[in-house]
Image (cartoon, rainbow, N blue to C red; front, side):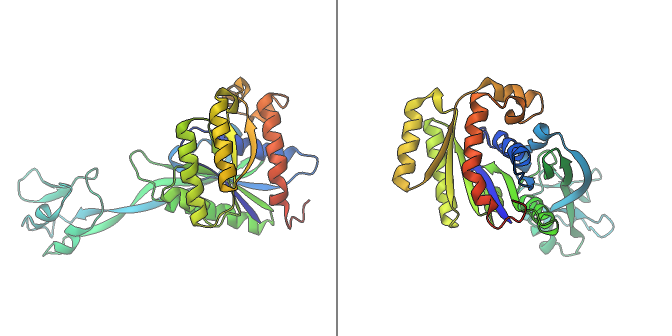
Length: 304
């Protein structure tokens, strides 16, 4: 099984649109390539908006833990209040007992270790959920964090792990991962174990800078990288700068996608642009990019 992870140094470059289009092209080609899809951008998981999948199962995700005070054991000594650096320990209404502010608590457990009465415990918190769905173009694993919850990368790892296990169980040759933006922990989790990273960028100064950060992150983990420029015709000088940067680093620039209103229209219809308008400029460019990527995902594919 081969893993393709789609990354970008910044958000909004078109990763989800590309992932959805690749899923469609893999399914609809003359020789279909069965794939599993994973939306690893759990902070803003929107691949399901384009693929319109049917949910088969949903499970809670337990992330961090929060302190909880046992009122029957609390003696009101105030030790927990003094050691908490986040001011999460509040005096209860009677002025004697303490209680934890769930919003302020960071789960550091300092109060647990310092409480002389052992009246405080750490309770695991359900911070989101992950789902397995069936889309028009293959199985989709995705997740959603609850409001104000932090993404540490554990949920990303869980989503990828479930997708990988299904691919192995059903002998599917490829896993396409719609990765999160940036270079932090969630991105590292999304890129772990991948065979190829496709970095999507835009022809701007910020796009070039953040592309370089994503490429350096991938290089640190010895992950092969190829680059795509989206909306390349809006600023030809910026596209030329990205092309020069890729040549300097020895990176393969495998495609430039023109700005195309059909992409936005397709998203509003809940379809990949390659299915909505296969003859549009963006669709043709994406199809060419997919033909360059497909051989790397078909190595050892018994379905081909």
